[in-house]
Amino acid sequence: MLEISPTGFTLDGRPLRLLSGALHYFRSRPEQWPGHLRRLRAMGLNTVETYVPWNLHQPLPDRHDFAGAADLGAFLRAAADAGLYAIVRPSPYICAEWENGGLPWWLPAGRDVALRTADPRFLAHVDRWYDTLVPLLAAHQTTRGGNVLLVQIENEYGSYGTDRAYLAHLADGLRARGIDVPLCTSDGPEDFFLTGGTLPGHLATVNFGSRAGEAFAELRRHRPQDPPMCMEFWNGWFDHWGERHTTRPAQDAAAALREILEAGASVNLYMAHGGTNFGTWAGANTADPVTGRGYQPTVTSYDYDAPLDERGAPTAKYWAFREVLAEYADGALPEPEELPAPLARRRIELDRSLPLDDVLDGLSTGPVHSPVPLSFEELGLAHGLVRYRTGVPGPRTDHPLTVEGLADRAHVRVDGVHRATLERDAGHEPLPVAVPGPTAVLELLVESMGRVNYGAGLGDRKGITGVLHNRQYLHGWTADPVPLDDGTPGRLPWGAAAPAVADAAAVPAGGPVPAFHRGTFEIAEPADGHLALPGWTKGYVWVNGFLLGRYWDRGPQRTLYLPWPLLRSGTNELTVLELDHCAAPVVHLGPEPDLG
Image (cartoon, rainbow, N blue to C red):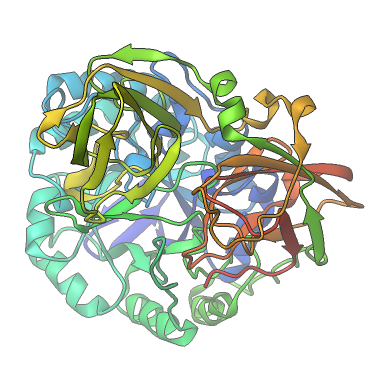
C-alpha cells in the first residue's frame, strides 16, 4: 500500500516518486490504449492518471455503460500490462474541459438542486452512482493486486466552494464502498484554493504550470505533513472556437518539469496525451467564471500540445521530457514504438444530399407542445438540435423580436424566410418583425454546443427560455428535438436522397440551408487520418456511423482527427451535417493535422 510522509511516498516499504502522466481513456479508442500507455512508459513515467466522467458512464438515470471506450476496467488492466501504476480521479465533478464537467445533463440544477454541495438531493444521485462505480474501481487497487494506488476525492473544489461536509461525504462514500488506498484533493497553490478545497486527514496536492518552488512553499505552509506533489503540471493548454491555438515551447515546459523534480516532488503531466473530444463531449468555459458570462465553447481536438499528439505520436515535447525523466528512472528506458504511417492524401466527394427540413420530422423525438419553450433537458435531449415553432399574431407593424436565454446558436425564420443567425452572448440587436396577415410562423432552429465545465456556469441548460415580440411574450410552442449521436446516419432515408449540388455562392441568397451529405471512400488498410472541410461552415462529421465531433470555419481547428480503429478495409462511409452552407460537398483526407 502507498504510504505518505512529509518527504514523499513509499510503496511496500520502498521509496516511490510518482512520475505520472494524464491519459484519458475516453479521449481515444480502446484499440489505441496499449500503444499509448507503452509510449508513456518509454517516456520515463511509472504511473498513468485518468479522470472518470460520470456523464459518459451514466448517460441516462436508468442506464450505465462500461463497454468499449467506457471500459474503465480494461483501461486499468492495459495500464498494468504496460508497467504503470494508476491514479484515478473519479466523479462527481472532473472539469477537464469535458461536457458539464462530467456531471450528467439530466441532473436537476440551479434552485432545484445545488450541485457540488451537501444538498441531500444531489448527494442521493452521487450515492447511487458510487454504488455502481466504486466497487469496480476498488477491485483494481494495489491492495487487491491491481495498480490503482491513489484516488481523488473531488477536483479543484477550492476553485468552486467551501462545503467541507460535501467533501467528507465523498471521502466517506469512497471508503465505505471499498477504497482503502490513500485519498487526495488537488487545487491551485494559493491560500484561497487550499483552504477551501482540501480535507483534513487526506493528501493535498497542487496544480500549476510554472514556478514550482513558490507553489510547493505555499502547499507546505498550509499542509506541512504532506509531500510535494503537482497533480496537474500544465505543459500545454486547450482551445476555444474562434480563439488562437495555444502551444508551449518544448524546452520551456521541460525546464519547468525539471524544477519540479529537482524539488524532490512527484508530478502528473497534464496532459501526457490529450486526445479528442469525440461526439458532443467537448465542454465550454466562460470569459468570467465568477458570473458565468462570456460563453467559450471548446474545440473538438484535445491535443493540448501534449508530449503525445492527438493520435499518440511522440512530439518534440515528448523527447524533451524523456531526457529529463531519464535522470530519475530506475534503469534504461525502453525505446518508444513507432506508429504506422497515416493515410495518404485523397479527395472525398459527397455525392448524396438530404435537406434537414425534409428529414427533421423523421429524426425528431417530438413534437412536444407547451405554453413556453422547453429546454433541451426538459425535452429529454442531451445534445443536438431543437426546432421551436410558434405563431405571432397579427396584423401588426414592425416590432422588435428578442430571444431570451439562447444556448447556444439559432437560425431564425419568419414564414419560412431566414432572418438572422443568433449566438449566445453575442449581443445581437432585436430583430424587427412585422406581421401583415392574421399570423406569422416563427421558427428557431437551436443548436447546442458544450455545457460549461468550470465556474458559475456549471449546470448549463440548453435551448431558449422565451421570445418577446416588443414587450409581449409569445406562447403556444411546438418543439421538435433532434438527437445528434452515433445513430443519426442510420436513421436517415438515404434512398430518397438527391445528388449533392455545389453551392457556388459564398452565402446562399435565401440564408442557411442545413443538409446532410454522404459519400464513400476506399482504403486498403485502416490507418490514422485527418479530415479537412475547406469551404464548409459549421456542423458535424460521422465516419461509419461514429460521430467524430463538431467543425467550425472560425477555427482555430481546421481538421478533425480520424482514428484508425473507426475504419475498415474497403468501403467507408462519410456523413456530414452542414448547418449553414458549403461551397462544394468535398472533404479532404490527409496525413497531418491542422489545429491552427
